[in-house]
Image (cartoon, rainbow, N blue to C red; front, side):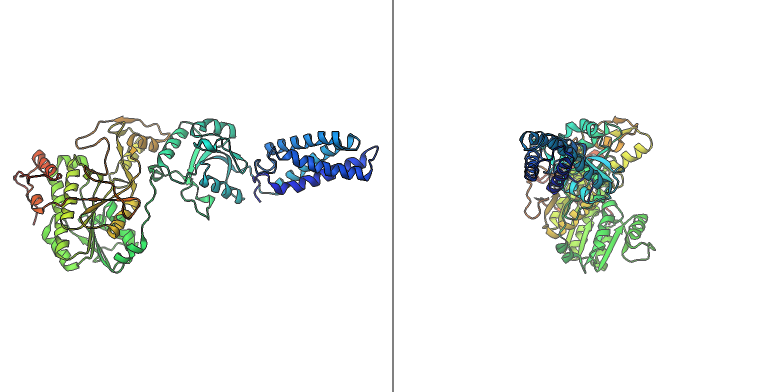
Length: 581
C-alpha cells in the first residue's frame, strides 16, 4: 500500500472503533459511572455526530493525503466539533464525552502513524508538480500511487483549463495554470515538473520549459507514452523531438508489408540521413533484395554496418554510382530490375546551391530525370521522389530544382512526398547549433522571427514509406507537421543555462522568413490519412528540363520559370552545361 494514498471511506470504521475505545476508557475512569444504556446511547450518538461532521469537511472522500498535516487538521476539527456536540447532547457527565473525544483522537492519530511506519520510507521521494490535470495526469498520479518504489511524489497539479482550477484529484490540489508555476514550486517544495498532456502540445511544452529555465534549480520531465500499462519509469528528460508539437504518424504496417515483402527495392542516396534510415526500416519488411545506391563509399559502409552489424563492402546490395551518369543508371536498372524505388539522393544545402546552380541542376534535376527515365523504361511499379517544403512556392535554387523534379516525377506517373526539415540530419540547424554551443558560442540565427517546420528522421521515413502505399502517380503527399517552430526559440532551448549568446545574421539569398507546405492553388485535402494531404502536381515535359543550360543568374531564372505553369511555353537560354550521358 502506498504511503501517499488519500484518506478514503475505508478509514471510517477504524475511526469509529477509536471512538468506542475512547468512550469506554472515559466511562471506566469516570468518578460517577453512567448507566449502561446511557453509555451505549452516547456511543451511538458519537458515531452519528462524527459521521455528520466528517461529511462536509470531506474527511473520507479522498481529499487529503493519508496521515498528512492537512488530514490530521481535518480529523482534529471533526473530533472536536463532534465532542462539543456530544457534551451538550449526551445523557452522561460532561467529563465522559470530553475525555472520550480526546482519547479517540489520540487513537486515530496513533493508528495512522503506525500504518505509516510500516510502509516504505518516503524521504527519498522527490516532490513534483504534474502539469496537466486531465486523463493523462490522472493516470500518472495513479501510477505514482500504485508503485511503492516510485521516485516521485505528486505535490500538486497545474492546468490552464479554468474549469479545473481549485479542484482536488485524489487529494492533490490543482494550484493554477502555467503562470502559477513559480508560486506553486515555492509553496509545495516541488523540485521539478512532469509534463503529462495527452495531445503532445509541443508549443505548450516549449513555453513551459522556457518558463522553468528562468527559475534555476528545477528539472522537467515528460511522459511520452500513456497506456493501460503505464510505467512510471517511462518518465524521462525532455528531448528535442518533444518540442515539435506534432502527433506521431501511424504507419499502416499491413499495407506496407504487402508491397515491400518479397520485392526488389532500390534506395538512391542510401548513405544520407533520410536514405540510410529508409534502408534500415525497409530491411525489416524482408524485401527480396534491398539495393542501396550512393556515390559516397564511406556512407555506404556506414549504412551497411548499421543494418547488418558488419561492413565488408562485398555485398552486391551496395551500389556505388553517380546519378549524373545516365548510362550507368540505366544499366543498373536494366540488370537489377528494381520493383520499388525510393529516390532520396539530392544536394540540399540552400546557401551553397545559390552559388552553384549548375551543380544543383546536374544532381537534383538531371540526376532525378535519369532515375525517372530508367525506372519508366524498366517497368518499376512504384517510385517515390523525396521532396521538400522549399518546393512549395519556391524562391531558391534548391526550391526550384525540387519543384522541377516534382513536376518531372508527375510527368512519369510517379509519386512525390514533401516535408520540412528533419532533426539530426547532417548539416541541419540543430547539428550546427549544438556544435556552436559546444564551442562556447555564439549561436547564429538569421532572424528573430524566422520559423521552420521540423520532424524527426524516423517520422520522415515513415511518411515516405506510407506514401508509396497510399499515394497515386502525379501527386505530392504532404505531412501535417503541426505548427512551425521559431528558430530563435529552438536555439534558446538547446542553449539552456549555458552562457552562450545568440547573434542574428540576417536572411541569406533564397531564404524565406516562414516556409510553406502548400504552394499557390494547392488545397489541403486528406482523403486517406488524417495527417497526410494530397496535392496535384502539374507535369513538366522533360525536354524543357533537358534544355536548361548555363550557370549563374541566367540558369536560376530559367529554373524559376519552369516552376510555374505558363499559358505559353517559355523559351530558356542555351549556353553551355549539359548533363553527362
